[in-house]
Length: 377
Image (tube, rainbow, N blue to C red; front, side, top):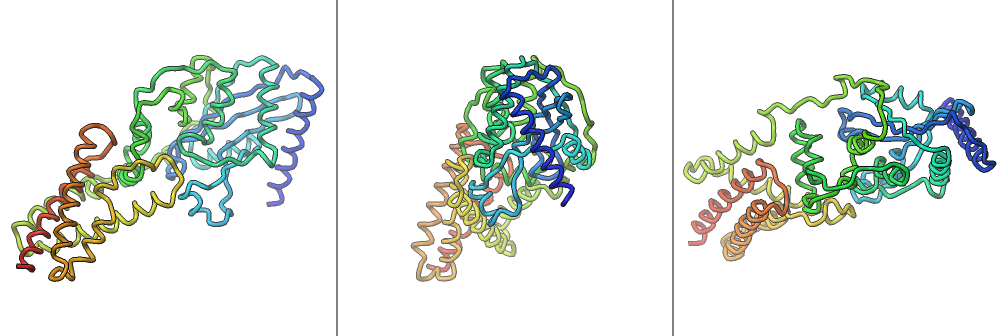
């Protein structure tokens, strides 16, 4: 810990030296500013990679990384604030050697693009970085799509580098799915909580919330060199199909349909109802508590909602609440048909397992309706 504090102090002194030099109009012809792009890791938080700026000046013996992707795990109620969209990220300055060691330890690849800048542009960028590094400015409210470690760099560099313009050929959801394609459960969970805001047409600039996209944006104006290759240890292992959400949803669908004809399988309907109730309560709770705009306008609430929990509570008292149960079933059936229309019209993206789950719910609701009629005759 002591060594880390010493390094942090030395880096701060070097940064201050740069600032003082700029203030006195001293030109450093040996200085370079480059974009550092890191490949993803095996953990969810590192799946999408990382971006940072490297500043190197031999005349100052300075070689540091300006990193907008730092956060403090000691933040009170860390996970709650993250879920609520109220977690502050911050700009930090790290020794390049230490930064590269960390990524080498994780087996993640690192490439560098030295940006062609005039001395005046370098000074302006450094002044901006120093300004943002001040204690009162270094913290910012994190947003996965609109304000993260990569968008902060994009917003700085676009004033000095010509980034491509036009329309991205994929929307936010499709870009995200490209990184979690092999991690089936992660993909299913992410797509469940993300709202329809992600399914619109986006610009190339908006797509640069991803490190790889910002790297591509600079590829025509800056050559790159590999600092470290990616190792297999950092690549997420593909989910086995037989334990994937798609396979499990197929089994649930077949059993639920069979339960309509085979009496001994009727408990499957109760299991599907319980699972639907739990999913509905969890998803609703997440959306209510969060400020993340990425989760807003989520039409998955049509098939994943608390009404299933209300139906579940009603069933034990079906003789007295038979009419209420029938009304709830009709509402849920209508909502299931509505989500199908939304999916077919491309209003919000979906996965095949969601279709199977909704089909299972449809079969389950039909079976429960028959049971309600039997008990209230």
